[in-house]
Length: 131
Image (cartoon, rainbow, N blue to C red; front, side):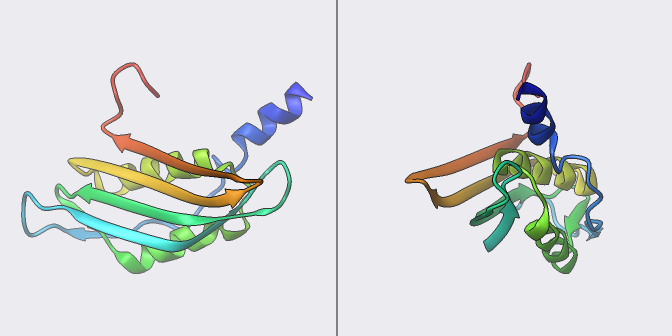
């Protein structure tokens, strides 16, 4: 059982997803907030869909995320088996890799399942000693 849980815990983390495109930033010192209220992924344990709102808030440095590519990237999670805690952290890591923001926060506000609602937040830069 432990091996199965280990495999499921890593599910979706190394799957190739559509590339996040960027364009050159023209202005310093502002923040962008992007909300995706129809985010969907699949629980790797049950195969049931997870629904929620994913919000990305970031301060661009030299590059800004292009929204069409972000939409295609997020849509790729629709059939991906991944825990939503991992989805939030993977989205943050992929955004950071693509545009190297000054700072970024990804929040996943997931619909209740079994009477439990989850709110997951990942920040960049990571806190020292974490991740």
